Image 1 (cartoon, protein in one colour):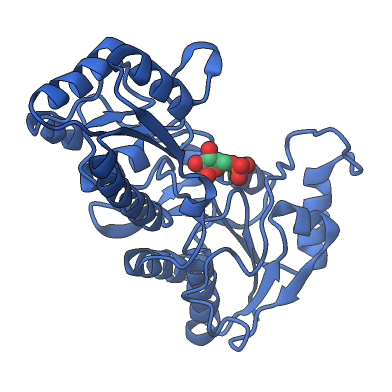
Image 2 (cartoon, protein in one colour):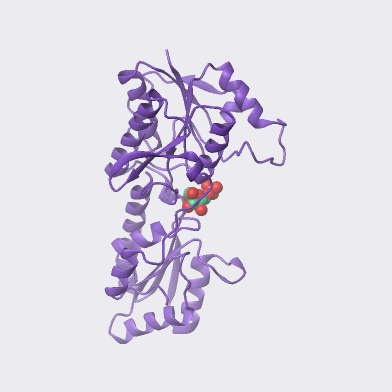
Length: 338
Ligand code: F6P
């Protein structure tokens, strides 16, 4: 019987359990494999913390947020303070053998795919599965977790609209995404943000302030400013706080800040993410069955496919200057601070 391991690593996101279920159920039902769930990302492979994932264990988890396996940001190829194990990759190789694994599915973002690629180079049979709310994994058009995060952020922006309007205030909302502005762009557009600031685009504070003033002059005394957490600020000040203070100082209009934070990563996945994670999961099982190792499951132009992990490892997919959504938003009068 083919024996496969599954682990989830890096920051959690909605849809992880749907992906685990997709891999596991397809592996068991379609291909008759045995499935082992590794706890807490790569740490579980070092500490040998795992359990068998039977069909029963995989049942009832589709809609659950988080990950039933637990996760960690432990990077086996990067020495860290307090390390108790000298050669973590070597221990992982030994434990992979000891567990009798024929393949390992690594569900995670860019960091995880980088590690997955290095383990593949060490000779392990690896299949990567891209996840993150940030949507910034190289080699795929979309990651699961992103749609759920955009839904949550859009709902938050909708709610800010009504209170902003009542008080005639400027509302600054900071969304996650690390150095990528995908959540800011999509939730900013879906929520009707007046200004959207993306880490990928330079912005001019005078332009941002002028947008707010022009709206007030046109009889719209409130504005919604959506900012990606990774925008550049002087001395790396917090994005929302910096932008909020500057707007208040430059316009005199009362301004409030909201940092959405981890709410974006919690809770049940959206229907679209459940479907995407299930597609990714079942395709990962097929790749193992077909012995297509050293690959990451990917979606390109709506079609499910795979890309070599070698091409993915460590790179980030950012918003390009010619992004059509940005262009359309500008045509609608949305300001990107330029
Ligand atoms: O990658 C997902 C993400 O939520 C980013 O948007 C954010 O910058 C980061 O993780 C937060 O990391 P941590 O969970 O380590 O606080």
